Image (cartoon, rainbow, N blue to C red):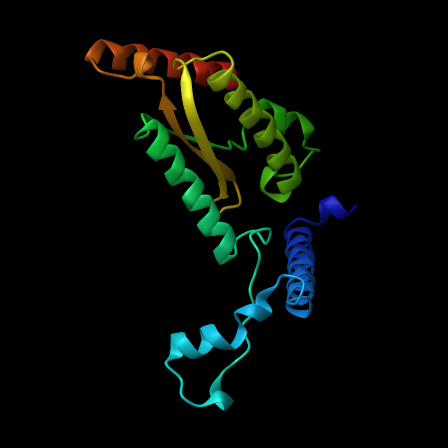
Length: 197
């Protein structure tokens, strides 16, 4: 019955996500001693603001890297990506995969009169399964060649559909250097697309 709520169900999901997020933030705010932020407390505030009066120094709340989307988490992800580029070189391929609400796997699970946009749970599950298949084809089946390193990010569009971006660094022997290599890569991409649909 809950899944038939349409946009109301989606609003409920967002409200529950925000409630969980607020609970996590409250926990982090109340447990700053265990995060060991008390060492930085007044010193950093004073130095950053060039403050002379101690009464104007505020209380700093630090979010650990385990808090997804926080400054520490984003910095960690950025540094990890830059470390890959430093070790393996610039990315060779940028691939985007977008969820299609008309995929047969999604259509088969919808009830009569039900729209895909009202089933974000179904869209996310099917997208995740196809994303896992694409990762497997890139890494294990080597459809683009031997992969030195790969990183991907999943985002959600404004319309609610998930999509993923891949940055792939190939081994030197598989890098695209000629127009013929590029044509082969396009053919492989076409085969990959027909396999996923």
